[in-house]
Image (cartoon, rainbow over all chains, first blue to last red; front, side, top):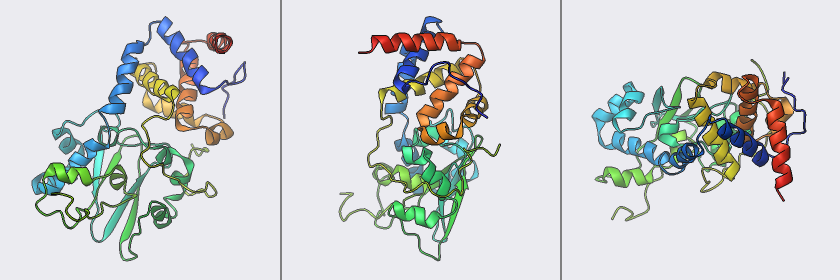
Length: 205
Length: 103
């Protein structure tokens, strides 16, 4: 039901956003410097390193982990990660019995404060369409083979609730510091399309 | 609304092809779309449900062939013109002017 008509054929996106931005700036409805600052924040400050810190803390501090699983929004805010698209968070824990994976089939809902802006594949049709019907096959495309005796649960995000997967701590990381552990945690392991592999021999030293 | 955006379970979209070491943005125009969306959202011109709904109102072909930030751009244009923040005539004139100035 697109009743949005163009009197001129749509031009390329570069031209379209330039036109929009220059009109909004002329009407003093946006400040281009403030727009620059927003962009810089999401390019340099808000990203999956935030989520990795949450995961590493949960791995070393059982009390923090309990708080994280009970009220994720509050526990994540303890580390200073709050803001749009993270207002209501649920952390789901991978175990020997269950592997979790997150999608947004309807749009691209994603926990910005902990993971930053989503990658293209998360927002595109192939992943959104297929991970709900063939999750094991999709995980294989990420190089992740989940054993048949492990249940795979797919969580469909929505505008109100965002998920973060708590991956399993890999073997061979006994005695590692929180900072060392955080280095191991990838974005995809917190979406659930990968797991955190055991570190290469001697990686912590 | 059971529109084309309701992709869960649909067949035929092919491989996922995750990009290694993907940058946050692939083009400068994506940066501007993102920043302007956050700024105009913060300015109270629409709420997040209206923003998403304007994406869901896109034509099916336009939706499936457009990238994420093209969806955002379409939603921004729809909402800002529907609300009279800018007019379609202003947009068309400015695009034409920019097109003439761009070599």
